[in-house]
Length: 279
Ligand SMILES: [Ca+2]
Image 1: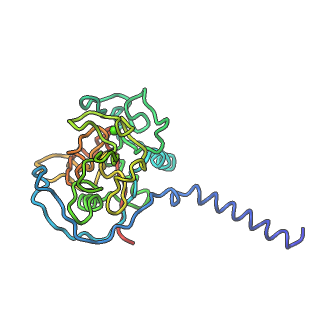
Image 2: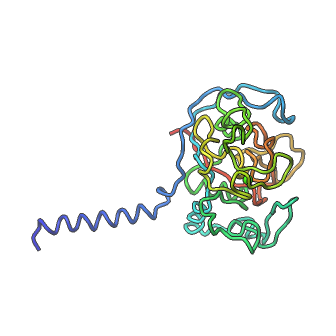
Image 3: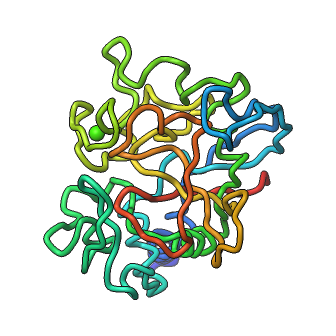
C-alpha cells in the first residue's frame, strides 16, 4: 500500500481510538462548572428562622459550581464506573414523601418512590435517594467536592440579599414559572409547574441565580458540605440541605433557608450538586 494512503488511514484509526477513549472517560462526563467570582455575600434573613439571623456580610472566595443538580444519567455513569452501592441500597429502604415521610422498603436511587417506581423518562431529572456520603463519593470521583453552606447561599442569591435566586418575586409571579415546587401552603406536591415530583434539571431557566446556576430553589434539596450548627451530642453529626424541593412551599425555597439530615439518610426529595476551588 502506498505510504500516502497508509498514513491518513492510520491517522483515522488513531483518531477513532482516541475519541472512543475520551468518550468513555469520566473527564468528559464531569459536571459543567460555572465560575463563581469572589465577592461579598449578604447571607441570612431578618424574616426567616433563628439560624438565618443576624443578617451578615461575608467575603466569599472564588470557586466553581455545577450549573445543574446531578442527574440520574450522571449518577448512573458513576455507579457503572465505580460499582458504588448507595446507603439506601445497603439499608434496603429510603424515605419517601407522601403526606409525611415514610420508610419504604426497596426505595433507592433507581426506584425513588419504591419498587413500583423507576427512572423511565427521568434520566435528566436530579438523582434522589442519595445520602450525604453518596454525594461526597460522587463529587470525589470527579475530583470535586460539595459546596460549603456559605458558597451555596452566595451562588444562589449573589450580592444583594434577594429572597430567591431570581429576585424577590414569588416563584410564579407574572405567570412566569421559575421553579418546581409544591403547593403554596405546606407541604404537598403540586403539578402547576408541570411536575408533581422531580423535573428535568434545565426546565426553569428563568429561575437561574445571578451567576446562572439552575434549580437552586426547588426541584430537590441539595446536600452541602457543612454540618448543621448548634448540635448537642448528635452522632453522627447532621448535615445541611438547601434550596427546598418538589414538595415544599415558597417559604422553604428561600435562598437563606436551610434544613438538615443525618449524613446517611436517603430521601426522594434530596439530591446534590458538586463544587470545586477556583483553578
Ligand atoms: Ca411541582
